[in-house]
Image (spheres, helix red, strand yellow):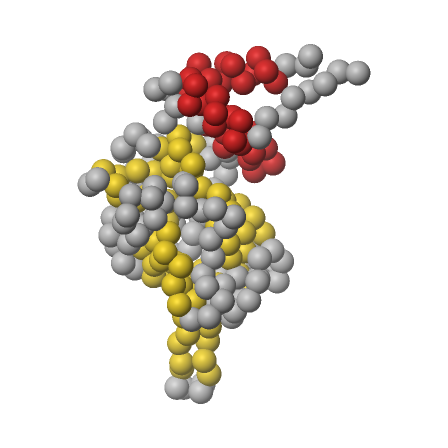
Length: 224
């Protein structure tokens, strides 16, 4: 029987370290088992590279509309200084669901949002509905969906680009989404490519290998 090795993200990242300086893609060490807004009104801070600076604030917040005498609960992401998620410019800037191979970087025609601006990600526990078609997330607000989003953040006065896997899971009003993994380019001002969703475990790790490490991984992946 032929055996096919299927390395995990951890093992692939290990190969990347062994490959030396070619490996520049780095896993965010602060995502852990997942990041989402707190269950009650409040904030979950995300420091992407664990340098002591809060890059994003995941908020559970409410707004009261006197016209309708109604309180709405939102899951929101607030940008820290020099940080932002990749969106499409417009009256409301929805997060873009990025396709495989998309290069997250300083592209013309896209925005990362203004520092300290707030994006409403979910409304009363449902997926953001301002413009789900144009942003690539589909039309249904009642079905969980997973995809990749791009972001930038600042570390030591340098801009870094990255991508995060986010699931709109409709967990609860004020939450409704979770960031399950994130990777960034440790070399400043360097674009980073989005992996294939169906092979994310291999794709994310392979990005961290560099040329030498990737060759080693391919050799290990061969049928033995």
